[in-house]
Image 1 (cartoon, helix red, strand yellow):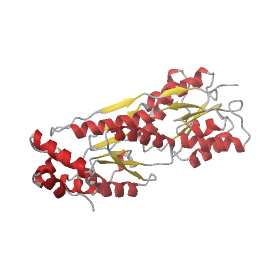
Image 2: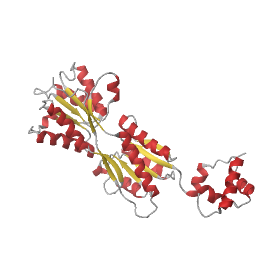
Image 3: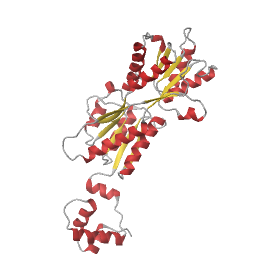
Length: 339
């Protein structure tokens, strides 16, 4: 039979309320009385029910995490960083994957609202200028801290951790130029997202600073899917004035790009120089050393979780908003070279 708070109270010779104060660390209890209760807990081998505790305190030791693509290694490493810090603070995680679906994201927020969680870490699927009223109303009525990971929400001022995408794309394009490339194509992500727009800005900035004209024919608009990069690469390879280098703006899209190159018998970098954005472990495993811009994903997850914990520990009514931008790293493996 399970041990109850009443059993502990009887063994320690105190009231049920006093036992509850010790278990929840709330309210004053004399040290002598506290020691009696702790002794009774140990002797009876009592394990508090997380569900019962959440009902009495109106919260759990759980946080919600919402990501758009759980199969993307980028988000897998972010989740790893979040989990590391959560474990250090004895917090549990409820994870939702939205598959880049706006309705699934809204449903996840609504479900989490009823779970008595302490806070939410989210990478929004919604483009910044296309949030609907139901989504915004759900966010407004959550009543718990929200931390953003590499995504923005208009009309709300949330803490968050972001990447300097302009710097990353600028340095990648500059590396191509240093190798002698002047005809550099780019396959963008979804232009409704700020990261995609920032990466395109960084690409253009590097061209301008090197007196290389920006040519629209070399800009191909993708949507972060490998299918969009596959189709864009096929079009690039059919161009009469074909570029000598392709900068692909996500790790998932680089897979589609490489598939198209392989089908056409194009060698890297002998026939075409390639660079990706975000780490591409799957290609490195099979010996395809592709240069890339590396975002510190685990650090992003850890920082996001630390921001949420800081917010939870802030007992004042005025919540401090912190927005942290991390710098990406250029990792050259030879695929950027001009042969």
